[in-house]
Amino acid sequence: MYSLILLNGGVGARIGADQPKQLLKLRGIPILVYSLITANRVKDITQIVVNYPPEWREAIEELLEAYAITTPVVLVEAGDSRHSSVAAMLPHATNENVIIHEAARPLASKADFEALIADEHANVSLMTPISFTVAPVDPETHEVTGSLDRNRLRNVQLPQKFAKADLQQAHDKAAHDHTVYTEDATLVADAGHPVYFIEGSDVNFKVTTPTDLRMAGFLLRPEEEDDD
Amino acid sequence: MTKTALVTGASRGIGLETVRRFIHNSEDITTVVMFARASEDFDAAVATLQEEAPVGRRIIARNVDVGDRGDLKKAVKAAYDEVGNIDILVNNAGYTNPVPLQQVKMSDFEKTMNVNVYAPFLIVKTLLNRGNEFSLIVNIASTAGINGRSGWLSYSASKAAVINMSQVMREELAIYGTRVVCLSPGRTATALRRTLAPEEDPSTIMQPEHVAKVIETFASPIGRFIDSENVVVRQ
Image (tube, rainbow over all chains, first blue to last red; front, side, top):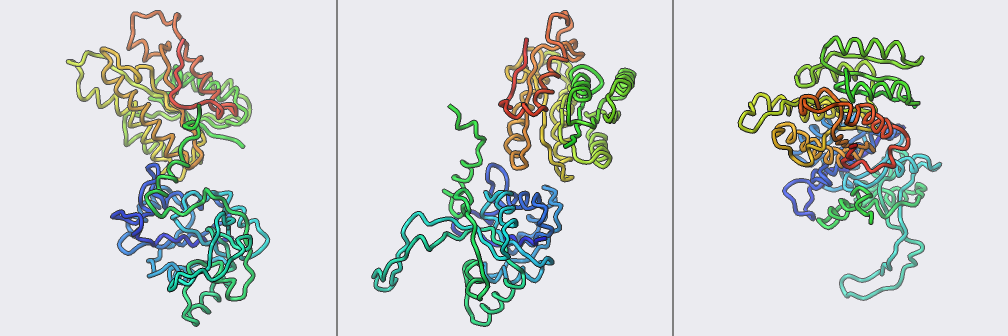
């Protein structure tokens, strides 16, 4: 069984709204709700730990009630960064395995979660191939310092699953080393635990900008709108 | 997988015929909850259905005036507690009192909206709030909701609202994989039609079982291949 750590603490600075982006409406439904409903339907997820931006707890509680989320939910106030939020949410997870997801990826499907859970390894992330070239550079001099083989690179997505003990140990180590990570698959791998990936989908993108919001809405249209 | 259906306005007409078809013809609908106002007709219809129901079919009849919001909400909660998830909902109950615009009483307009618009909405909302996941919702509208008819202001307006509300439900409930069908029958030989057109010979127009057959098709496995945007059924 899994505890879902649902990252929902962003304030949406890049999307430019007067409310957290995960409460903005995507085809009339708050973005956060997509992840809650999907998680609620995955039977192996028996607990949801969700964080919230300061002052937005009541709004989140209203959504949980209105959408009848039956999986037990623990609410945790968001930290200063994603890294610190995960660290603060992790002790609330009651299962030995956790899944990390973020509300800003509303198009992650039940099948994505189930594929992750079905994988034999303990620490696994959805990832997609890189379709463009990433160059290592010196940001000070603007000099290109070499090349990277994109076959050995992956775009890290969520959801990801981890043994709670591995994730906890990796966070403890990062805290000890004063290192901050932007996501957890590389954090856990750097701590010495094996982490694997399975193929993600380009549909499961992160909604960050107003254009992303429109794109996601387009993808959620009824299919017949594409008919001749 | 066995399914449970809830049909409103189930004492006669399209509602009763729909229940009959679900009970006799559906391979997976094993429980049908019938909502209708208390009447001798309803009691008799339920008794007949229970006599003729195949083994293993469960019929639960409840006296409910869907125009009474308080009673309706209680009845929906009680039904959910009793039978569990409602997979198929047929919002069929309807009301009309056709009078010229100058004679429309606000109280009657409100009753029309209560029965035709607010009741379907309240049933869906109440069940969603309880965690119910529908596979199919059929909202019965009317061709009079597509084009307004002289003398039918409140009825036409209410059915136009049903058509629009169904489109919204269809989009919002796609997140659960719920199909929402809006069905707009044309002239059908029901008690409501007799109120709208008392001069008409009911034997010359579409019969309730014809519309029920279409609803049965939507509830069958083939139903998901049919475009469910406002479907007009007319003779």
